[in-house]
Image 1 (spheres, rainbow, N blue to C red):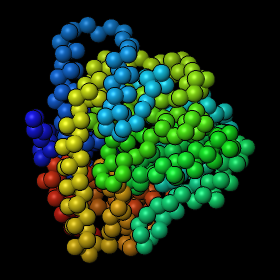
Image 2 (image 1 turned 90 degrees about the vertical axis):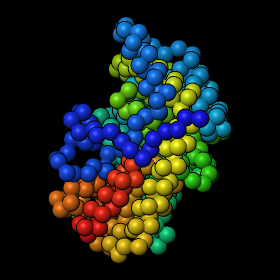
Image 3 (image 1 turned 45 degrees about the vertical axis):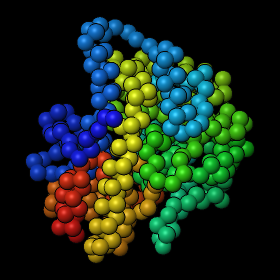
Image 4 (image 1 turned 30 degrees about the horizontal axis):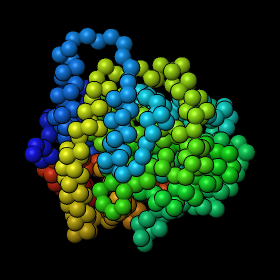
Length: 385
């Protein structure tokens, strides 16, 4: 059996890496980008493609969509019909395209903050109004819940035509239960609001029950939904710019497909198709090793924060390699705190304020890196605080 290395990582300085475009001596643990080399099976598939030496126009065929469907059968034990699928060049471009296709200028698009900040960009930059039904935080349990009354009122607004859900949730690591998703999807149907579910972190549930893809809900609910999936977070393939739209209802799928094609979002990166097929057909063992390392890294951070009186608590999310750190005991301004930590020690964390809601009380830490960098980051955090 192949052994994968999750205890070392290449030096990415000077490689055009967004994450590692930092000053000498700094340690970036902010953007959702892993430092591990991706699965060698993926690299081998892309190398064969490059060695072939022809770089013309390409499009996916059945083997691409079958690989996505088989992955969901094998890993998540759910059925994804290949007829529901459309290729697109990344989750974020797809979100913006769907916002333009499903809603109209001046409409409300609903999110649940704190949430991935690029949702806001896709909404506001396209002339729609951002409406948030903020998640409710229980300080004692360090847990987020849906404000159902507030969500119901905002979905009922006639101007609200689209809801963007993050499932599992970034940045909190919350894995929505099937019953919660059923309730959200039912409220969307009742109020004629299309549900768009970003499930890019779905493969990264680290413990407890698996996540529930929205396309597995009962037919009346799934037919009002669009789901976005991608190997980009799972295998750190963001530069390939590939994702899959899963829309079970024919008219909705065709409308989205026309939008993607009209905006040239259906023509993939040269290496996207072979890389994705290799990820979905040969990457399961690598993912198992990755999740084992992420669980270990998360435990190290939790133990450290539990034994050092820094005024920082780890919110117990079950998914993603992004930790949500409650700093409410020491700050009301996580942007200033993040800047101060970076200035004092070179540790670069994300300010929770960019995610809206109560994010100004939180920092986000990326733990998808070797244990030595986790230890370095924690020592820097302690030094700063």
